[in-house]
Amino acid sequence: MAPGIPAALERPHFIGIGGAGMSGIAKILAQRGAEVAGSDAKESATAEALRALGATVHIGHAAGHLADDASCVVVSSAIRADNPELVRAAELSLPVVHRADALAALMDGARAVAVAGTHGKTTTSSMLAVALSGLGTEPSYAIGGDLDGPGTNAAHGGGDIFVAEADESDRSFQKYAPQVAIVLNVELDHHANYASMDEIYESFETFAGKIVPGGTLVVSADQQGAVELTRRVRGRDGLQVVTYGEAEGADVRVHKITPRGLTSEVTVVLGGKYLTFAVSVPGRHYALNAVAALAAGVALGVPAHNLASAIGTYTGVKRRLQLKGEAAGVQVIDSYAHHPTEMAADLEAMRGAAAGSRLLVVFQPHLYSRTQELGTEMGQALALADASLVLDVYPAREDPIPGITSELVIEAAKAAGADVTAVHDPARVPAAVAGMAKPGDLVLTMGAGDVTDLGPRILDHLPN
Image (cartoon, rainbow, N blue to C red; front, side, top):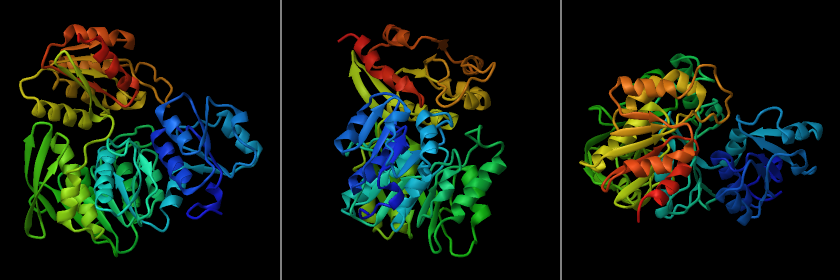
């Protein structure tokens, strides 16, 4: 058995290997020496990156892609029972391992940091991974987006720290046993799996309960759901709770956030001393994410001053207010925001970063269930833009829900006074945006689906 590889994961086959979470685990296993194989629906840069690491990646799903001598089949919650490779796994009596169990196995024995919350996980875990790497600690990390610097979402490091996103959507984050856990916010989302805020709280309480004895929960002192979670878990034996934020009583208190164009400067009070550092991405919410990463690193024993300086080297992650390019004086920026809170935060960040410019948004609602529950709030968030084009709902893993369309978002946006237009054919978007945009404008493609593909096409349609 290769060092650092559980026996069941020596020859894993990943169904949906190109996904953000799945590909990270596959990359780490390949770097550790496992014989990695898998399949994905389409070719991608991720598939090529996996092949470069020695993995076998098939395009399309077929029973024949699964080797008879595979040690296991790794799946996410998005893989359906009738997937031909999953059916074949049952015929071969191969173990089926959930993505979260595979990640938990990779983190075993490491000083793990698990980053949780309804939104902000990718940015915060990325900031911490980049900072720790810059300080020479050689962390391993598995993140839901490609970092600008390393250009990858995962790496096997030689150090003893492992930074990972902890996905609450299907309760799989309850499988981890971190030394440090970060909870950025607790809000109602993932409506196919959670029926109420009480269920959300119970899930996060269980996650906090998995922190190893003597470990630390780093949690927001500002966000209502996080404050309630703190109330529920504070005082548990063996659990250290460190709060961060702008609230007066926060353990790591934000004294001031100063916007500086597409960056900001943050001053915190930590241990009775003031500490100022730069954050190289725009917006108050990203500044607060940086403070969460700082608090987590300090809980690991990293000197605060060194860590703060290293956080300033973080330059972003793909799809998190990522500048795609500029043409004809128009900047095109990509945002992964798909929950109303995220949408509003990114739109406000863009407003603050480019005062006086018009903000044009191309928004794609993500999931029928989320649109059903939060479509009104999505539309209200779009009122922060000068004008918006709204695409049809991106279904991802879901089947349509009768009567649930992007019209819910559009109607709410119009009721909030927004200038919004429905566009049912994405191919029409680049020309439509080119006809609207003027020099100095910002164009934001927003959503967790394939709306991201439109950024380069919009740039191509803008005059040179």
